[in-house]
Length: 117
Image (cartoon, rainbow, N blue to C red; front, top):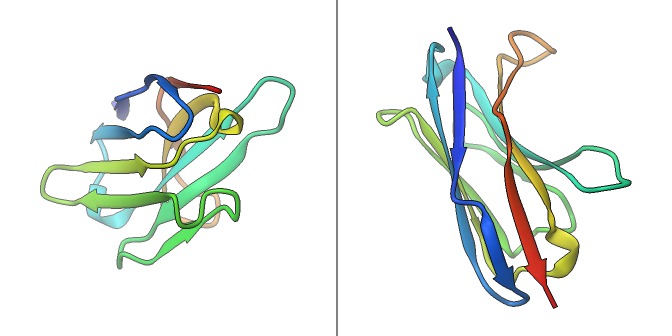
């Protein structure tokens, strides 16, 4: 059974920081691209950041310079450090794992991030 369990969400004022973590089980973690998506009310799901098996990273333009994704293959975890948070970052954040090309895509249950102005 594949499980992706997120933690670290919460409420923070604008300009603050949060760190999200995702613990994975049931997958060969080192073979998977890991990513964070978010879904805000009235908006489409958005890729926030992704990190490949080789450590290459991709970020949404809206979070570049503020968010950092990292992975620990030994711990089977992926983190998202979020700094300088803005109210528009408010969303449910989901951990995602995949083997690329739409293969073996799994999702966590999501964690709420709320940023107040």
